[in-house]
Amino acid sequence: MIKAVIFDMDGLILDTEKLLMQFWKEAAALYGFEVKTEHILGIRSLSPKLAEPKLKGIFGEEFDYKTIRAKRRELMENYIAENGVEKKPGLDKLLTYLKEKGYLTAVATSTDMSRTTQYLNMAGVLGCFDKIVCAPNVKNGKPEPDIYIKAAAELGLPAGECLALEDSPNGIISAYRAGCMPVMIPDLSEPDEELLKLCAARLDDLGQVIDLLEKL
Image (tube, rainbow, N blue to C red; front, side, top):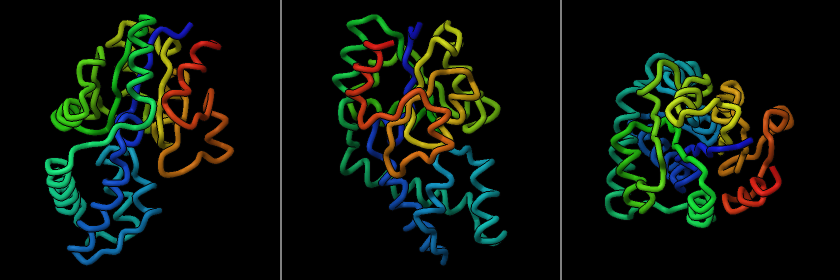
């Protein structure tokens, strides 16, 4: 029986993946590298210790991951400070439903706590979640299961009683390995056949989670 819903943040709660895409490209270009869409898709939701060797494997050791990532964060934070963040379709409807029905809720994100709380607060939904777990809170980030195991534990539930909502392959793999029920709501890319095998469902938007929960 599902008693809680655990949300990824970027690309799932908030429409920020497109900003990550834009500013990774811009930051890398400032240092002479042409980072392409497929490169960024490959590091979505990955912890820095996994993303860094992945990008260096593509661009070589001269790719200064920490410096370029810091510039990407600076560019993105400046944009968000001026323009705010956008919520994904169906979010408010789903959060209202979950509260009315007594489901517990958590956020499990690769973004650090400071920016996570800032972004959720800007979107007006910070108080809607019972727990927030970020990558720095666990030993291994996505696609390892640590963050979902911790989120479930923070909620006081076994992972099998938690629905996990994700938009990225690395997030789905993390939730699956933790023993949660993974549901994919694609943002920038569709799941392939192998990834779909790990998913309980593939939905178009957050509003459709309500129908899924009604059927479980």
